[in-house]
Structure formats: structure tokens, C-alpha cells
Image 1 (cartoon, rainbow, N blue to C red):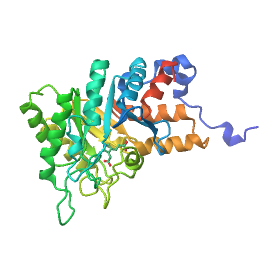
Image 2: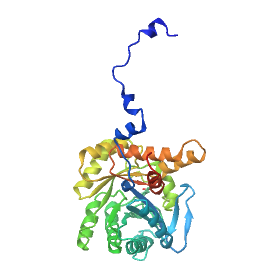
Image 3: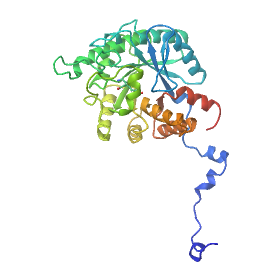
Image 4: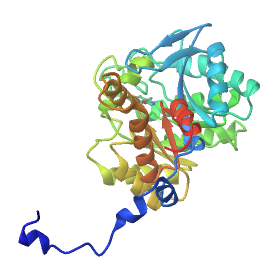
Length: 337
Ligand code: PBG
């Protein structure tokens, strides 16, 4: 029985629930669709052969040698995922990261093998020194202070980008957060005859705790200190727009925001200001945190993954780099979500 007051409550004039009543109505009125073509799979390439080493902090992900990479990219292509982003685990490291631009390094070898095997696969090469330096920082260090030197690092990043383009990379993606890195790489690519190789700039890259699992995966934990003197303060939104503006002015063909899920406001603002494709990187810690909850039975893997990716797309990302690429494409192939 309703009380007298309850009986007098107004009936709603507007009823948004009308359009949510059936699956068909919900489908017709859905604003954001996730497609396999929106996804880019990050892959860790190890030196050597017949290596498939599971990454402890990233359940479902492994370091793969070049020979073991091809079945993985075949599976991705079959599911409609068009692109991969390659990181390298070299056999040796030194102070300047010279294994990064060695033509027989894991990434150039993987690029060549992939382009020979499936030319239609878009191969993106991450350009940074941190996987190749013995100290784990993204650039070369000042001998006394240990400071990461900006201008001294630029030619090494440029050399690395050219080595990847020489190997056949379709896109290079500088992630070191050195000032002027996009311009340096653009000039070096042009001078080396790679005018048509686009630069995907890690434009707004925050100094995030959520890169933790990646550093295990890529063996790139800094031996001392952290990356806060070159990556951005997570508190800074306006500064992110300034970083993006600089990379756009330096000639970036695509702009990235990273991480993704905690930075949806930045993705939206970049989307509203720029016409080039916007890429968001759902990073290792975002994946690891969700997967840890999945393993405990606290989250449904498929629903949580597709919801997190849909939210990133709704915020304005055209493309999403995600460790869920293969799984998500598989779920999408099964039908509506
Ligand atoms: C290299 C690089 C990192 C990531 C992408 N490129 C690590 C870092 O900046 O510390 C992180 C990716 C991830 O966490 O999934 N500089």
C-alpha cells in the first residue's frame, strides 16, 4: 500500500528506459561501437629462438622470439586486428642503448620477418632506449649527476627510428618523452629516404604507477630514481595539451595519450582539438589490475575488458593499444556485447 503522499508523487514525463527495453532497441541506440579494427596489440620480442616466456605480472601475455611471433600475429590478423606495437628484449645492454639500433636486434628482425610473412599487418615500432640501456632510463645519462640528457639522447632515438624504418616498420612511435624527439625523428627519417613513414607520438605520456608490469615484461625498470624528470605529472591536464601541441607542430601524424583509462578527460580534450587520429594506450597496469580481479572471481573478464575499451573509445580515441586486443577481437567475433 502506498502512503497518501506517495500516491501523489508525479509520474515521469520523460522515460529514457523506453529505448533500453529490448536488445534490438539498445543496439539501435548504441553510440559507440568497438571493432577489432580499432585495436593494436603490443608484443614483446625476445632475442633467440623458440622462446615463449609468460610474463608473471601480465597473465595471458608472453615474451616471444621472432619464430613464435608469427603464429600470434596470424591469429590477430585472422580476428581482424590490423596492427601490432613491438618492444624488444635485446641479448645485451649498454649505457647508451646501442642494441636498440643494431640491425640484427630483436625488433628489426621481427619487423623484417613480419613484413615478409604478412605484408598487410601494420607493424609499429616503439622507439625508446629504456629496454636497451643497462640503467633502464629512456635516454643517456650525465656522467656525474645521472640526469637523463635530452639533446644527447635525440640523435640516438633518431638512429633507432631509422633502423626500424630500414627494417620495414610501417610506423615509428617515440615514447622516451625527450623534448624535440618528434622533430628529430622526422628529420632523420626524411634524410634517410623514409618520407612516407609516419610518426605516432606518445604525446601526453604521464609518469604512471601503472607501467609497473611493463617494466617486468620489457626488463626496463630504472636502476635508480624514476622517470618523473621526463614523463608528465599525472596531475597536469593543461601541460598535457601543451605537450600534444608541440608534437603536432613537430609533425606527428598520430597523437597518443597514455595511460588511457585514468586519463579519459585528456583523451576527450585532445580529440576535440586535433584532426589527426588519436590513439590511447591501455597500459600494462590497467590490464594487470583487471586481470588480478578476474583471477579472484571479482570481475567478469569479458565484460570488464569490453567496458574499459568502450569507455576509452567513447572518450574519443580512434585506436586503442591494448593487451586485450586478441581476446577482445575474439569476443567481438562471437557477436554483440
Ligand atoms: C618505454 C615505454 C614504456 C611503456 C611503453 N613504452 C615504459 C615506461 O615508460 O616506463 C609502458 C607500457 C605499458 O605499461 O603497458 N618508455
